[in-house]
Length: 170
Image (cartoon, rainbow, N blue to C red):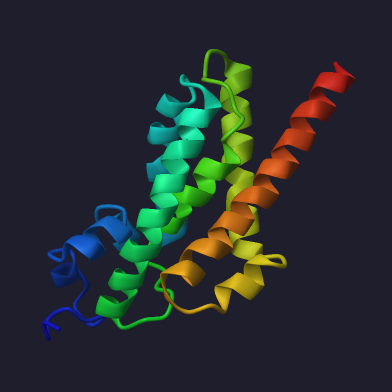
């Protein structure tokens, strides 16, 4: 392992392709709220995917998850940390799960649901209710990814409940 590739020298870590991808092209090295920045960075991809059938988004997420296990595992090893906050690939996948059933942004109301999705995912990702907290204890790429998958599923369920409640009340 290159001695320059350590958590002590984060900018040199960007030269490594695993770290570059895992940190959302460097966004994860943001000093404040890197998970939030990474989640925001993922939004344009999923807004574009919303124009396609949900199965296309699901297929993209499956590929991103599989790649993410490897990418995050290698990046964490290079950074010599169990689950570095600078790794935000997992936020990409978690947010993608959350917005899986949302429609494209065609109106202000649609945009509000995307904002609600963002807030819900961040809340669940930070709070880590069971089983997210359990997965967070796993080591390696699978552990890094699975807590955000759980947070994304919780956020998706809450988002869908809110959308149904909104439709029922109106």
